[in-house]
Image 1 (cartoon, helix red, strand yellow):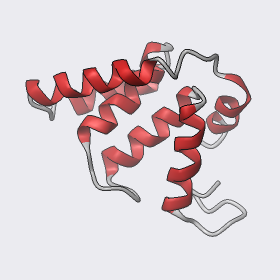
Image 2 (cartoon, one colour; image 1 turned 90 degrees about the vertical axis):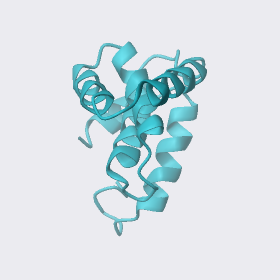
Image 3 (cartoon, helix red, strand yellow; image 1 turned 60 degrees about the vertical axis):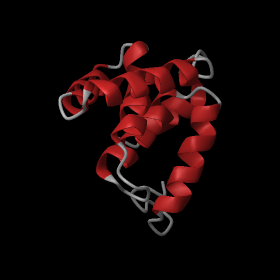
Amino acid sequence: MYTHGEGVPQDDAKAFYWYRKAAKQGAALAHYALGEMYHQGEGVPEDYVQAYAGYSIPTAQKLEFAKKKKGTIKKEMTPARIAEAQKLSSELWGIAQLPLGRIGSELLSLS
């Protein structure tokens, strides 16, 4: 909603807030959205480690579009940064074990 300004003014900070809140509840697509924000530097500083980690959760849940993004960003990272991102991904995986659910379904309709 806030990402694209649908029905509300476009606001990257509010989009980040709500995606992060949903990601903490295990919504894979919220992790993907955060990965996109970090990858593009939209509303947050560009951070490939955070982006890679964000793409890893939906990749693990078999979402092919996330797998492609993760592969793209991996090519632009050093082995040390990839290792850092994989560690962060493992930490995030613990909170992402929930099914896609209502929040994830709503986020999917935004893409």
